[in-house]
Amino acid sequence: MQVSEQQFAQFVREHKSTIYTVCYMFSKDNDEVSDLFQEILVKLWKGFGSFEGRSDIKTWVYRVSLNTCITLDRKKKRHQKKDSLSMDINLYDDNDSDTLQVKQLYKRINKLGFFDRAIILLWLEGIPYDEIGEIVGISAKNVSVKLVRIREQLKNMN
Image (cartoon, helix red, strand yellow):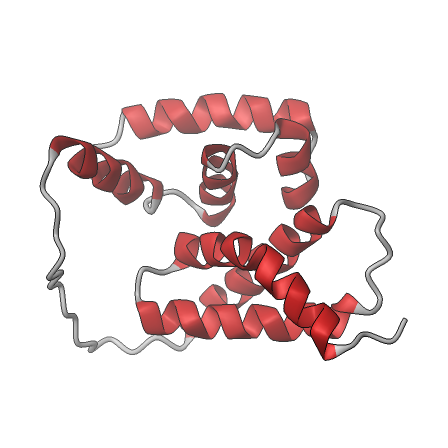
C-alpha cells in the first residue's frame, strides 16, 4: 500500500495524544519528549504502509511507541554520563492538594520498572485489560493480576 503524506499526517493528528502519553511515561523533559515523539513518528512512518490491521490501530501505536521508548531508554542508560546539569525549577508549580497527590502518584509510578509502569499508565488512561494485554504482550488475566500487585506496591512505597 502506498501511503501519502496527507494520510500519515491525518493519522498523526488522530493519535498524537496517545504517542505523547507514552513519551511522558519515560521522560518529563520537554526536549527529550520531543525527541522520543520524533523517533516514534519515524518508526510509525516506516511501518504505516505495512500495517495489516490484525490489531486495533491504537494498540499498534501504543506498542510501537512503548517499544521505541524502552529501546531508547536502555541505550541512554548505557551511555549516560555521570555529570549532568539538573534544573529542578518549575515556574508553574501548583501546590493544591489534588496536584500534590497526582505528583506523588506519578513520582511513585516512575519508581516502577518499565513493564509495570507501562501497565499502570495504560490502565490510568482507561484502556481495557484485553487491550493492555495486547499492547504489552500478556493475557488480560495476567494484566489483572499485575495491576493488583502494582497497586499494592504503589501503596507501600515511601
